[in-house]
Length: 151
Ligand SMILES: CC(C)(COP(=O)(O)OP(=O)(O)OC[C@H]1O[C@@H](n2cnc3c(N)ncnc32)[C@H](O)[C@@H]1OP(=O)(O)O)[C@@H](O)C(=O)NCCC(=O)NCCS
Image (cartoon, rainbow, N blue to C red):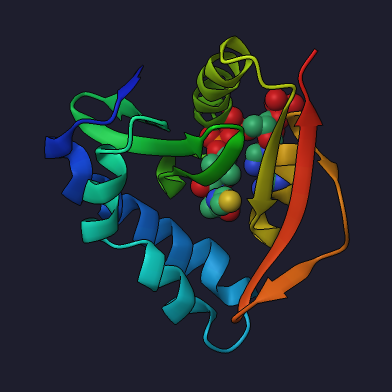
């Protein structure tokens, strides 16, 4: 398994991975309209746009030329984080996260923020994130704001 930067040619496969994980693990935790709201900002066209943003940190985990994990951040804000179901709980998410944490630290930020899907709260907690507020909802998207101070 190797971790590398997302390239343009990977975008369709990554978009599939995101939507598969989202529909199975995140969508059931959302309220009415949440899937549509998420899909407005997370489609292939938007992914191509984000690839052009120099502030974006976009990494994949790859095994034998198959993409099995994805993580994304901008400045000190993490956003998308998915590992293929068959590969979960094998430490791949942790390796992806560590890559992004190192980059954010190198940029001089003091903390990392994430609006965690309810399904990922235990994982972010393991990484050292703490809840900042209660659970929030916006246009059907339900999330837990969390933050980790970098030392
Ligand atoms: C969140 C996700 C990317 C983590 O990837 P992963 O490869 O399974 O994570 P890892 O195997 O590296 O696990 C990291 C730590 O979290 C723990 N963990 C993983 N899944 C867990 C779960 N469902 N419940 C509790 N702890 C969990 C692991 O035991 C590990 O702890 P350790 O370091 O003490 O051993 C993956 O579970 C996923 O795609 N989830 C569904 C989509 C989702 O919710 N994404 C987040 C959107 S914000």
